[in-house]
View 1: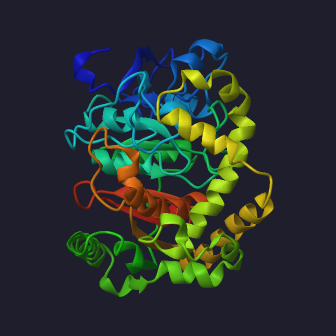
View 2: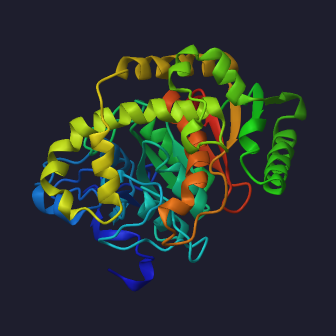
Length: 405
């Protein structure tokens, strides 16, 4: 591995269409893909050397990667990721942790860690990752780049190792907003047209209160100033998102508990949303990977091994239908709130990236807040874009449809 690639790559190679054309939308651009995508002739390693050893090379390339190649871009390699896409930290015991170019000594975010770092370090023009519970949004935030998680099911996940199909999406990173859009137009199969302007902009005031008061105020002010300049201040409305979700998604009551199991500093209805999501995640992850983990758990890294085994042990078939109904209910209430062209502004994460090698027990409160924020879009299936407003703390704008992208 090259010393100067910030540890972003697990394998380097050159891949492009046989007859590239200067007329293609991505001509002249380079990209990298997370080591979770199938590329013909290569094994998708899923962040673990034993997975790499026990799986055959792909006999075809994932459609999302093919779309980008046909758009004229050149792939220069596969990027690092957390083992089995099972963390938002970006640390990997086996292969090392990519260096965060934006915050030395701090984690890059995961699980699409290498994809975020490769873009931040200017090793590629853009990159592909996946986002189930935050795996594009978190590294984009921590590494100071733009990121986009599309609506669930809009971009093909065929040829991508599943984590949890109910939440898995293919996302992408870029430093430049014009490149982020060009990649998006291809993957979303949308024509290059002028995007629609928002008709309303909601600021989730309770979500911003999960940050420190000073940071919350600065971030909100920066966002409000931008909206006023671009679209006018009359569009801005404040909302208590937790209360709105609590009132409008009655099925969540099943997952709301008084003790709040450690989520005392988060928003109760959003903490309940996290529990509902994890129930479905455990169920699908066990179906997807339980057998392999049962045979090869000794080859998982310390920390991750215990977490994955516990995750599978706690999997159950109970209340799966309830969790799925909550997905539908949440999407419907967000649709009612945002209508066709509304935007919901939320912090991506509750603070700066934790320092490298911080024990997970010391991150409990931070992670509880983070997952409360990240789970809204994951469960509802709506799309989000990461906008850089402050270092480490870009806004995550939830959009009902890609036409505002």
